[in-house]
Image (tube, rainbow, N blue to C red; front, side):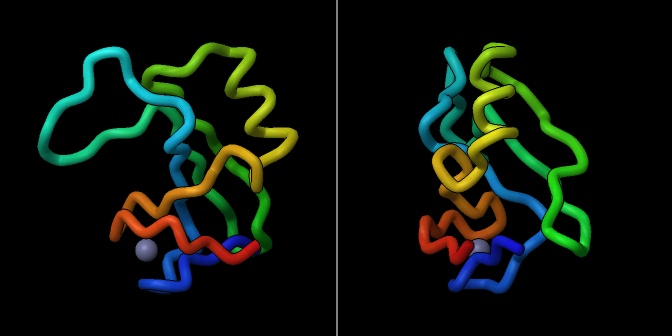
Length: 79
Ligand SMILES: [Zn+2]
């Protein structure tokens, strides 16, 4: 399963590729968030700024899209 090497989070990842149209300064938000179960499978995708096509591609190729830990902000994700 994916895991953030900085804080150990493995339950939710974000995409820095897909950005919201109107980003807010604090807290940082992401256009796409994915929640994972204990087996590393995506359970839900939260599309806050992404298109359905982007969400579908992220679902099929998560390592290419989900590159950021929304917990600590690290991009050091181990797949
Ligand atoms: Zn982290």
